[in-house]
Image (cartoon, rainbow, N blue to C red; front, side, top):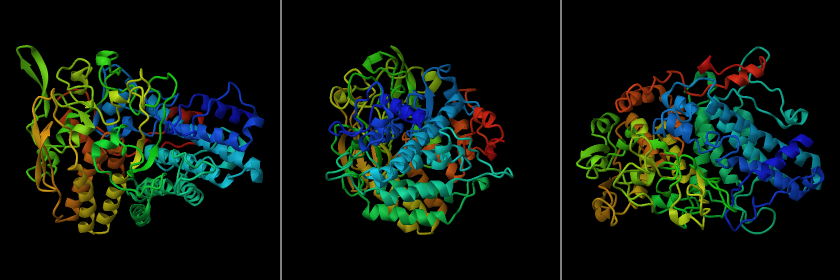
Length: 617
């Protein structure tokens, strides 16, 4: 008991919080030491709960490159082929292995993700144990336990997405017996033990015990970073989508779960509200989702499950979604990054659209020249973007392109300070989750160029709409699916990056949704709607392209490919295309890799209690 409580107290000392600057939640100044008696109070257990919530912060102390975080840019984007690792070839070799598909069960990043999952589970179980020990003496026990179960379920779902559903589930009884219990993933006969139902039960308990909002006064009210019943419904809906997927017969999938997901998704779409009570909706402008200075960035209605961040004191790069992967080189142009996490040539070209503003097929966009290339001039080789090519406007909110304004940093026209090594990762920069310079000193520490207090959207309303469209396609309702996909596409027509005095040229936004052209665009933007789907296959293709364009560089891509059962085909085709620009860089992607291997060291130290998942035996 003492060990676990002290551990959580230390966790508080290393947590930087997830609330808005005006909230008291997660802004507790931890003492140098906390006695057990101090913690066995309502205030004390809330401090320990704060330590459990801090696991949602992307920059954990044990995974400083972010590879243990909910953001999942290492796995979702880099392994998913939407981003290269960036920096130099020899920097962060474990990440290079993931990027090039040469990783194994001994990869340090994979081990770090596993540790993050079970560290968070330990923190949540600690809260549950304290609540049980305090019993009726603890006011608000039910809602405290519901929050702990939500945190535990979120991280167990992360474990399922990464390592498959045959992973250890540590019950409260297991934790009470030993804070590091000897739990395995197989039964006495060596058969896998799947944990779907246990995670489902935790989420059901969370739904029943959590409030719909945190408005008003009283315990936790006004502290909007806390979990709500709607957040728990959204996580459960996504759990059901994975559970229903037949991508691996050894995962004990259940196709009937898609109907349960559909029901939850419909409820969220029709009745769901965020922590402040605002009905879930698509905000007006896509770019405002990632601009802390916009009133719609946080609590505008689109954040279904948000991690709320805050920054205080003089810490640097602490609450950054992509801190060390910030653009450029250390100190160059005052940007302070190492040039990690660069969008791929393949991903950039996927934004090219046809005359109707619809995405091209994979073969067609790959047949087009790269949008940005090195061009020889009298002054030497410089990066040049062909801005005359019609593209979806979301490209320039998602990635940085040369000759297009980059937030409020200026317009990149030369490699120095923007891309560290073009020969290793190309000519695009990550952009979506970096802060504006204007954030500094307000929502960001003045010296922390990659830190920001803007929310990180783990699940957005657009994600919910597209998952519902996927359910409709599964049921054969192609027209209904088209309408939901078009809702997302129609919003994309509302916003685009504007030309300015430093932009190479001025173009138009060809808004085929509303039948108008708007001048002053930084590139040739075009977006239109689908009129019909002639087949289920056509609808699936459109759905998958829309998820990539809408949710790109938000950590989703590989996980989508895996649950769709197309990871090997898509990624090996990607290797054939992207590899021509980086010869001898990539290896083939394994045909059965729809999950990552359980870390080798965990298998060894478990002494027979763990069996490697089926893909990696």
